[in-house]
Image (cartoon, rainbow, N blue to C red; front, top):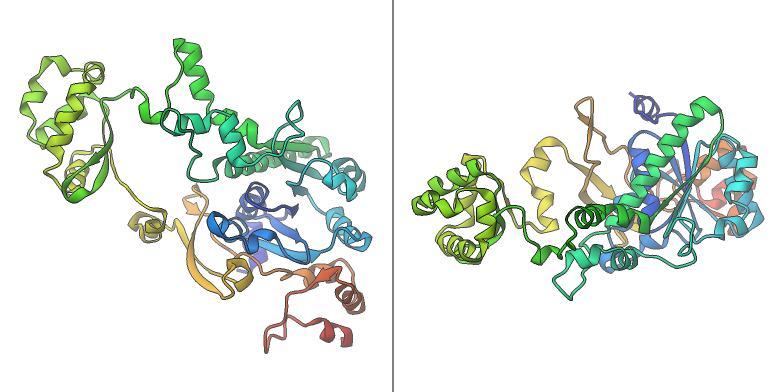
Length: 424
């Protein structure tokens, strides 16, 4: 089966998405649509998306959120570059961007202009804030976590702490994709596209809404997670034999009895003061120290085996890099083999690794990786040729720095250089 046929068998096969995005939020939206079968064309500056070379905690951004996409490198500050994007969008279904408000309008790529060009176009904007008093502010994931209550809930009292991953960026991109899907479905009835907006701050508020409602229902403010009053007595990280750590949970009266039987806690099982979960919650101050002391005699492996056998909830304390070898992920196809091209890895050389797929199945199947994150300008030549540009046009645009085609590799006849294009 060809790649085109494979795409057509996916839910969004035949849908063309053009994205001008960077960092995490916008690329996530495109990745979701790409994984679902859409043809996603990433319009990059001729210098490339800045996340290709981002280091530190951003080193994984590009290679994670840009798979299954095509890359065209265009200078949209030049009218000839804007013309190329307009031609791409003339036959597109979705346009996605996550630049500062007003940037797209200045380039002639705002919603008003593009909806006149293509009335069926669904225009997705990913912003820091939805329109309102805050929409002039510059937002980042960490900014909205601080102002949106999430950092307060994550850290200990007096020490607000951002979540350990880009939760708002990723979820904000997912909601952008959901909005695009909804707009495409509505277009089937109306024949017209529309503007969709997703925002970091509002996404963060949605994440902490349960704690807002907790206050509304109880009249008591939610405590930060490290100092919260848990709904269950045993629901915590335990330090055990040899300094190992493991998360253990006992969340029902039946589980409590199983737990006591499995670990030789007959006296606690018979103690009527802690017969019910609510009683055990009230007794946490004296109960948990006893349980911690008792569990210190067991290794994490021994505890895991017993909890597994009894059907009790537990979890090892796992580092992200350990997940590459997780037996469940490997057995269920949750990780896909991928080779990152040198400029996508930021390391100057290709890297063979595994990448996490979308956490869902369709018809019992995971959504497969169809293409690694693209090299810069990997698809410039093919896309421009498809738009009617001649080899001479390509040569002139390349020499003027308006577009960049992927540099030809030695012996790669499928990827001609600018000089080869000139002589074609």
